[in-house]
Length: 118
Image (cartoon, rainbow, N blue to C red; front, side, top):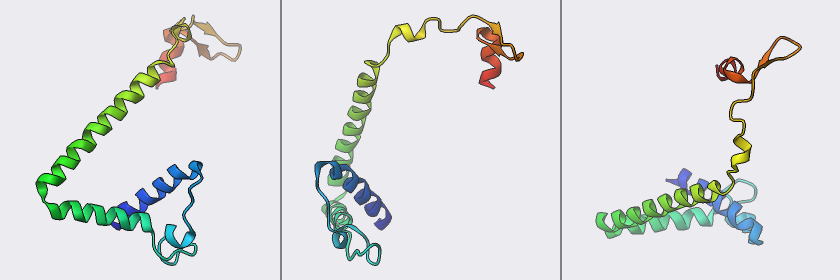
């Protein structure tokens, strides 16, 4: 659990750093690493998970279901936002016309596409 908490802590610090929030080294790093005494974010996460598990399986399952819904919504949002970057003119021609380059290699057409996919 400590490895997961430490990884989440590093990701969280990277997320809030552009907002100007920086934890002191003593509270941001594990003991003995870069002046660290305690990784406070990791400790808070571990305590929250322990508290959630102590409340019972049904509470943990409810929180897990909420997190799954949030993850699915994040993936759907990524797909919708990514779809706005698709421009049909970038796919014309989908397979360029075949030609043989001066060095003997082939480009385009099925003759050039199939060797490129192997």
